[in-house]
Image 1 (cartoon, rainbow over the protein chains, first blue to last red):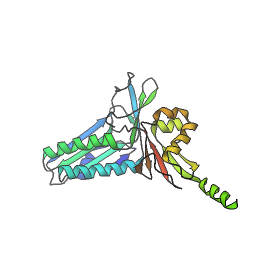
Image 2: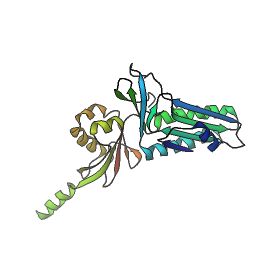
Image 3: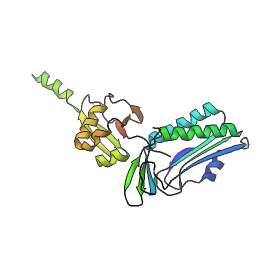
Image 4: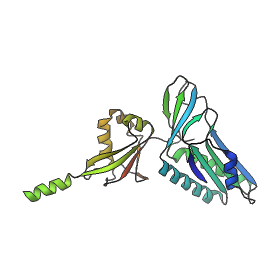
Amino acid sequence: MIGLSAEPLDVETLVQAVKTKAHGAVVTFLGTTRETSPDDPRPVAALEYEAYETMALEELRAIERETRERFGPLGIAMMHRTGRVALGEPSVVVVVVAPHRGAAFDACRYAIDALKARVAVWKREIYQDGGAAWIANTTS
Amino acid sequence: MAAHTGAGAAAAATVTVRVLAFARLRELLGFGERAVGVPGGATVETLWSVLAEQAPALAGLRASTRFARNGALADATTVLHEGDEIALLPPVGGG
């Protein structure tokens, strides 16, 4: 299950969407909005995300396929927020369910790293002083 | 003379593409989506030049910008066709 959402992300819903009786391990990654910016000394008030939806969804599907090819049979959910995300809320959630924990941890790490490097999503930091700036990922 | 004029007109025919701009590029251009006309035979690079004339602040961002044609990443040398959707993609920032 992959997608973009303008609404708050719910981890439990995503876990239930992919977990079956064959899965003994559930690894979840939440990327949450942070008050400190890597690029700017000003405290952050919120983040805003925008996406090129068709390309973003296609790339998420490609990452889902690759992750299964590399790490074996597992279930994956990846959801990314669009719009304004308040401090402390998740902007991205990756859930991997697998028979055992090793593959689940490795696959989750692979999927979030690939997502941050490749998916057509952009982030704007809104500072507490009212300013704003677009922030690129260092891995891209 | 008439034939010559006809050939010239064909070569100069305008191709209209739909330009999508995201994030900082959207802000600098002042639009997220717009139909833009370019001369027949124009490439993605030609389109970038046309846009950079309209928004000079784009000049410093050429090296970091990637392009997509109809949803797939495309080289700047890609020739534009009528109705193409050309996206201007700044470095991504998801997560």
